[in-house]
Image 1 (cartoon, helix red, strand yellow):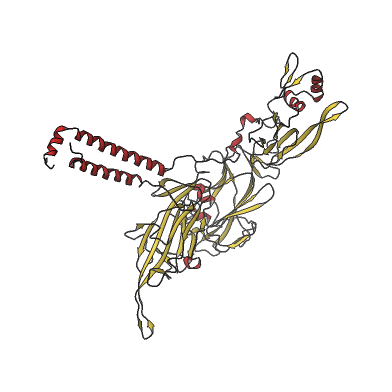
Image 2 (cartoon, helix red, strand yellow):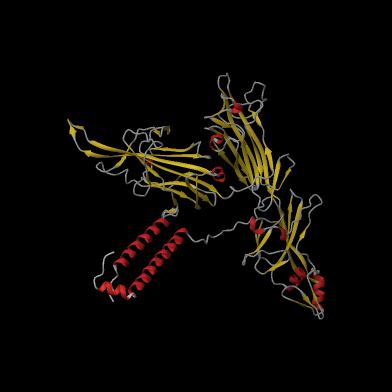
Length: 633
């Protein structure tokens, strides 16, 4: 019997090998994010090539190639906790887990400093890309970023010119995505444009340089969709509307208020309305401001519903929102600056009276859609002041410009009345009447407006034996640790719900105090039982000659007032929902899955070939025919 592989087997191996290679290639065509060396996510774009006189006519270009590290000026990266998901309207889509996204174009000075006889960066005097002005000459490279809520109406977010000359090397972010973009979902389009040239002939005429050159222009286009999972899937349930439109008295500073007359172009129609959703209850404080109470799992959010086409207000062709390019807001002391078509201000003040102001310029054009509910921001505990400043122009009329404002205040508070003690060593939560030798740490679960008081009692020798002695009784703060021996009584009250909660924790190893915590008996009663021969067990129970004195305390003391029917107990509150935790992603990566599938296909092919070879070799007729020369198929 011949040991060499027969022609039929050879052909079969060739076909199976081709099948395996094709299968593996198909598997790797699945959209998988690639990562740069620093862990950022690389985005693949489209590379367009144009001639010397071109103005980068991207929309009419007939062909392009996929961007790679070898054919572009640099590499476009997304920084943050980025996860690739299914494409959105034909462009790559990414979920941003922590709501922080930075856009990076990483490059070096190789092309900038290349010799004249090699392709090198050249200064381009073009001022337009695809028919749109970029605000000046491209010179030695431009980075142009646009954003859109619907992928139809685009707004300029960044326009950097002569960028590769002024910063020859770069690995820093040129843009950080705004909260309002990611919580609503946003499309991003990045265009990197530049011109290169190479000398093809070195010549001089009468001491005049007459070198000849070839020129090429390039446009790298990257488009993608991004959102954060923190707010996209929220359901709008009950809502509370806030704010009203007013015409400002002082035109330049958007301050003061004047009546809207019958001839005012803003008469009898509203631009839109703000409303809050995601809360459990709303109340009004002593100053008349609305306070939204949130419980575990609530996501209090502010929305804006745009009720007008900003290019055709009240259905009139000559009435529109126009850009205020030199706006100043006196109340927030911001400006002068380019407000664009509406400027939104949000001032946040925390428990420590520290404030910050977030400004969204060109708000009505860049961040809203006609007829849609646009989420502005998610809110934690604090006090908020919000204003929308905008300019209305009525073409064809004298004094046609008017400045208007929508302003309101509100507060957000946690509605619970809980504090969570955790063992310092084990990290486990301590419930009411718990005992620990290690001490404990207080966690307010992000409730910054609760009144928390803590009292520490110890045993002191006296003429009557061991008696209680208060050593500390005062306010407590979030994160405080308590390790000294004693019985700690923690009292929590919520001024907005009129509830209070009491917990007791024992730190130490004293058996008398253990029994005091467990049984509810007074110190003198416990002393008398011990004097009569009783034994205190490790769990604090007291063993007499004929019985064990069990715990007489309740699991927890919670005393709501008559003004509320809500009861706060440890059993009904999800402790960990508001406590920050870190989750590790243990999922198998797509690359590992694909390699495993490819391996299975390859092994299956090899097994099939071996089995077929054995079958053919074991056939006597086949062997005999082959030994005599056989015939070709």
